Length: 255
Ligand SMILES: Nc1ncnc2c1ncn2[C@@H]1O[C@H](COP(=O)(O)OP(=O)(O)O)[C@@H](O)[C@H]1O
Ligand SMILES: [Mg+2]
Image 1 (cartoon, helix red, strand yellow):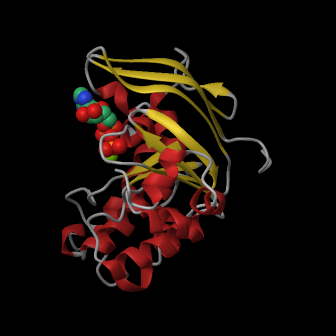
Image 2: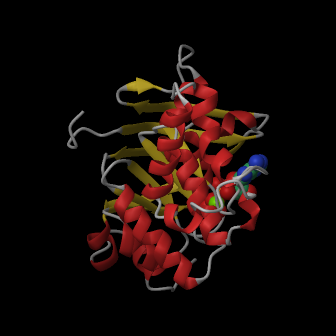
């Protein structure tokens, strides 16, 4: 698929927790090979929206969704969709690094093994090396592959989690405030990685850090009380916001 066709199209999305509405009529086109940032004050629905994109909300009881989420033109909420396949295609990275209580190697090998992506031990070894390289971690961990992932620094753990996602060959990577547990220098490293990954993946990143959105993304959406108030080219949103609320938010007068 070319880069001018949206990878994900969200149409008239409403979302409810226990009958309480959390998202209102969200319409958004997400393009491949670029970073889409979602910003907005706490509690405005950013994480809820992100979870709608790979049906992670399905695991929360008493939730309801109306509208469409199309991935390459296919509605991911249709009955015929295979959830395991969907979550392979649309991977997720969380706020707090959450490596499995396994070795560094086994964290990366977990998905490929489960999905049978490789045939031989050598193929798996090569894939693990490739994925660790992709996140810039190989040189740091190649002599510690059998050690617990918990021995790594937080920032290394987060890169390992991204490596784990990359290992199952996703097309979209969702990131929910992936640097919020990290110090400023680690945050920079992660941001550089995000910029590299966009060459290969469609990335949607939630951040409460506006500078981060400005640094890493091509397009930015501002959520406000469950609505997508403004969605435009990042540079434009931060210099010439169309909406008064956006201006208030980015200048720190609101939120
Ligand atoms: N699991 C849940 N059950 C009930 N309400 C929730 C749940 N998760 C989030 N909410 C509510 O949905 C709204 C949006 O939350 P969230 O998507 O987490 O916002 P953000 O990520 O922007 O901080 C908030 O009012 C929040 O309290
Ligand atoms: Mg959140």
